[in-house]
Amino acid sequence: MAPSADQKSSEKERSRAASGRSEIGRQEPIGLVPGSKSAEPARETEATGLSPGLYIVATPIGNLGDITLRALDVLRGADAILCEDTRVTATLARRYGLDAERIAYHDHNADAVRPGLIARLAAGAALALVSDAGTPLVSDPGFKLVREAVAVGIPVTAVPGASAALAALMVAGLPSDRFLFAGFLPAKSAARRRELRELAAVPASLIFYETAPRLGDALGDMAAMLGDRPAAVARELTKLHEEVRRGGLESLAEHYRKAGPPKGEIVVIVGPPTAGLAPSEADLDAQILAALQTASLREASAAVAAATGLPRRQVYARALALQGKRPPPETV
Image (tube, rainbow, N blue to C red; front, top):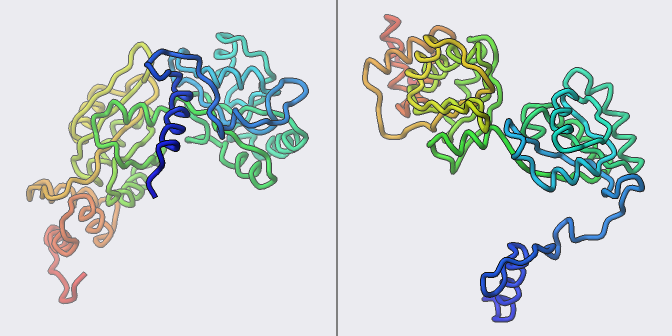
C-alpha cells in the first residue's frame, strides 16, 4: 500500500530532525531521532552517567582529528578503556583529556583478562574497547570479548569511525560495490599462495593488510596467483606522508622490490577478476609456471583458471603441455 500524505509528511519531519535542517533549509539544532539508541531511556552507571555495557569504539588511523564527537563522549564516560596497547591510547588520551582507567587487552593476555572483564560488565560497568588505530575487531582480538558479552546478555554498542581498510578502498579507484577483507596473508610464500588460490575466484575487490618488509614478495605472489590485476598500495593514510600507488600487480611488485620496504602502515587493494579479457599465451604460461612452483597440477590449474576466467580444462591441458605430459583421456 502506498504511504498516505500524512505518513509522507511525518517521514519528512523525522528526516529533517535527523539532519538538523528546517522546512526552509535553515540549519537547526540536531535532535534525537525517535527509535534511536540515544533516544531510548537507559539505566546509567553511578560513576560515569554512561549506560552499562561494552562499547566498541573506532579511533583515528593516523590523524587524531578524525575522532568522532560521540567516540569522545563514550571514552570520557566509560569506567575503563580496554586498549590494544595502553601506550598508544595514551597519546589519544592526552590530546583529548581522557582520564578513564586504561586496561591492556591484546592477543597475549586476552584469555586471562577476558573473564574479569565479563564479570565487571555483568556487574554494571561501562567499558570501551579500542584498538591501536581504526575500528576494533578488524585484525584484533576483540571478537571473543564481544561474543562472550553477547552470550551472557551484556549490551554491545558500536561507535563507528575510521577504518584503514575502508579508507584505502575509498581512494584506490577500484570497484567498491563488492569487496572482501582478507586481513594479513601468511608470512611464508607457500602458505600465502595457497590462501591466494582460495581467493582467486572471489568476484570482488580484495583488501589486504601487509607489513613493509614483506610487501614486494607479497605483491609478487598476488600477481602469480591472481594474475596482473589492477591494484593500489595505500600507506600512511590520513598522515602527513600519505601515499597511494596504483598499477598492475606485476609493476607494483617490481617497484617495491627495487625501492625496498616503504615506511608506515600498508593496505593493498586488488581489483576483482576481469571477465572476458583472456590473457596472452605468454602471460598464461607465466601464471601456470608460477602456480606450479607451490601447487600440484590440479591445484595450479584451478587457481589459474579462477584468476583468468579461462575454462579449467583448457588451463589444465596447457599445464600438462608445459610439464611435457600428455592429457589423460578422461576430462578434468
